[in-house]
Amino acid sequence: MIINLVCAWITIDDKPTFIFGVLNALGSIATFLTFLFLLRKDKDKQNQINRLTNIASNLDAQTEVMRQQNDLIAQQVDIFRNRSLFDSKDNDALKKLHEIEEKKLKLSVKPNLWLNGVSTHGTTGEIKFDLNNKGETAFLTEMNLINGDISLHDLHIPYELEKGQRRYIFGRNASEKHILQCSYEIEILYTDSLKNQYKSIIKGTGPRAKLENLDS
Image (tube, rainbow, N blue to C red):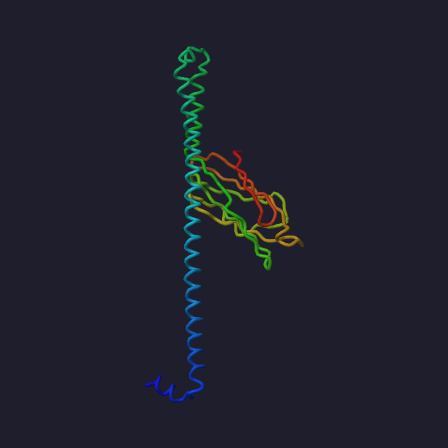
């Protein structure tokens, strides 16, 4: 009934224009809905890519740990094969075996921090570091700005960064430069579950940075 009243109200000359306008509106809505669908689809694809990237990164880390463990086992085998080493008066063979076992134990609990990008906000001068761990649990104890044009805030230290997890490090422009031109060098101190100590350094300018892992 409502449609009939509308059609009766619209003159014959106006009807084609009105219908064309309705079709245009419906077409615009359909285009918008299609855009939202594609946007969501692209976002889902990006999430899948991010997940696959993280999985690949973790597999690479596991492969590297296995390679190092195999190297240590090969050293042990060489020692056992060379039985003459056990006849040494200074017990060199036993000492080497003990050192290898210590290395294997440390390797089994070693964290492996990596930087998954840096983002900046020009208006507020904020900078955010995406710190990830593809090794075993890291117990973050200190974060120090060695030098640079920024200041760190909201550190939340100490912090337990588990395997496969991330946490953000927040900074803010502390100079007259634009945040994109701000340089920095950040020291991260942490331990593993056996209290072995480690140090990582984040160094860069603006969103361009790299992380280097150092055993202290």
